[in-house]
Length: 131
Image (cartoon, rainbow, N blue to C red; front, side):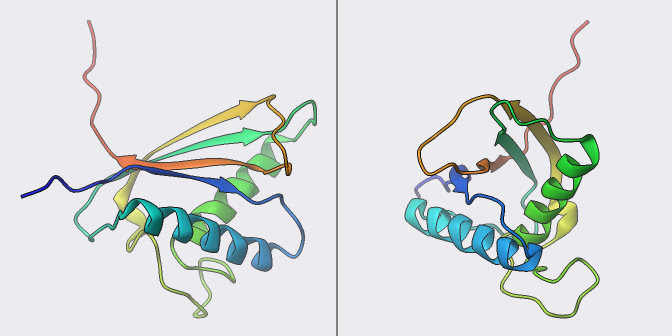
């Protein structure tokens, strides 16, 4: 039996208001990358989300970064109109508590097309505490 694939990456589209539409574009970009790699998750899988935000020299307040991270997580869960909304689309990550770790990195890279960042979803592996 072949090993299941867990890891894939997707470029996040540039941020544009309104937030709900941006979440929809994130969902589409991630779904396309996921399908291209043949990755799927069940409700038992534990995951790690790595976000690299391509901010260049732009300053962003911590509150702004937190809002963008929440937008990405809502898009992964299919919550396009926010976490409390009943309007949903098919989730990429079926349950919110599956995400065990979020790694956030601000990058000064500037890529063509000015993407907002890169998202990588991978299997969560508990880290050993060194001593």
